[in-house]
Length: 211
Image (cartoon, rainbow, N blue to C red; front, side):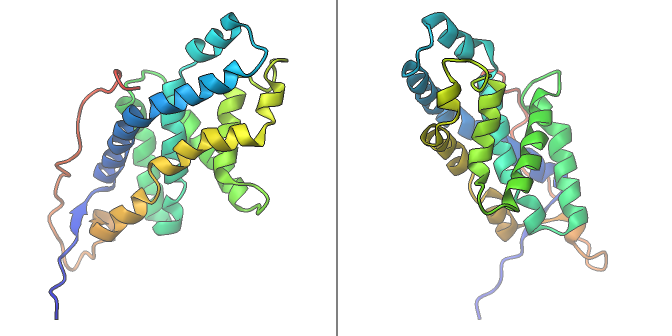
């Protein structure tokens, strides 16, 4: 019989930080593609060059993109862990994410949980897709629904699907993969205590250059 390799035990804080830094690395690679795709869609609207620049430069797009990816994957946590464990993970994400994003405000954390709430509602409605809900929220933050020249784009399903695709695909199944190879300290029986190892791969650094 093949010997079963014991899972690495980590705290929920370590798990949350590992997840957030992994998302940050993904954002660094995929955000330029997403931003270029958005610019191309805006080029096809009657927007003036100044108005287009206003959308692309006046908004913290990287932070929106980062928050959207975190929210899409974090929304799955409650389906993978029992309620108290899931709440601990989400609380640690909420506490750490603005620091990871190098923000002094709560723009990212507030947006993450705003999107997660919308995704949860969408998951109970078979007519709505979570990735479409996410991109709709970002479009609202960009005021595409209020600008006369972008209202048609805002309602364009192809636009939202194309823009949502990189967000939906970036960190798909991260938490499911994490659960396969690691266990959380809170889930370990008190009768068989195990040392809680700090996750060595967590990178403690500011990522203002990437977000």
